[in-house]
Length: 449
Image (cartoon, rainbow, N blue to C red; front, side, top):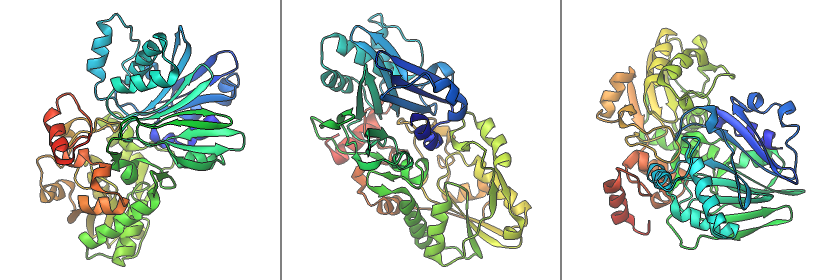
């Protein structure tokens, strides 16, 4: 079951995959580099059997791509065995790690997940019950975290106080399951129960779950990039269907930035729903103009820019019969670096496109993400220091239009204060080393963070 769920979530990470299962006596962990089918073949996981377990696919943001950073991470303590799987990034990782190193703690990886397990083991060792130890651990870490945790045979799910990364619980005929996206629950035949709430700790058993709500209510800051790009379109994230949000983004784009063109086409796969919405909103016919190699990796989450550039031509090929002699609107989910899109526009022109107009389902990305998306260096962003007209020229497009922040917020059907838009406006929902001034701006504007 864990392997099947991880395969559904493969889009969230392709570096490593792993599972930890309690077999009645101890926690057995199997993990390795590569896709789920490579890292977790059936013959390797045959011995990892039991009634409770956690799994993880990794996309390296904090910590290197080294297989030693594969999750779940495990530790043997005086309180028993612990295994932790973590989605997100901790923003105070370096300072907390240095603090623990000064207290003679030992770290074997450069992953922030090891910080979580180290802190948790210390609080458990002080005689705290698991829920109290988890609550104290949450008080020590900042940033984005959706955690699944095994403490011996007990399963816990934890979401950070802002709910930046998604986490949802479902009911199976013989128990419960928690995952980053509802699509994984669907694949397992689980009935969706609800999202894990920001700041909530859940203790999950075969006969039910017990909720320990946040002790102090904090303003939510759900990551807008989940709806724009990261999540599967068939998932529902915090009550909003990803596919419907992306179509609405496209419809709003068509109103904000109409184009005089012959057809609309997506940058597959993540731009497909946006393009359908643009077609519906504009009345322009929808066509598929690129054939995608289904076995190619998601280029955005490849760790190296050179790898991404090489991967583009192996991933996409224009359909000449669709694009030749046509004025085309291509719809993409977002532009970060711009290198991939520039190549694709050139490929369309080489295939005979008469005009190429670009519409983008995210406002310009101008600031680093410290919460689990690999956008940490400002000089990566094509929108930094360039106007929309500058970017149009760099890309080689005939016109360029981004959805507005107001349009994006409207499409998600949440308020601006309920979303993390930090990569768009540099207002961060948590304290971040080197970003105190920007954090204070958001604190002054909205309070209660």
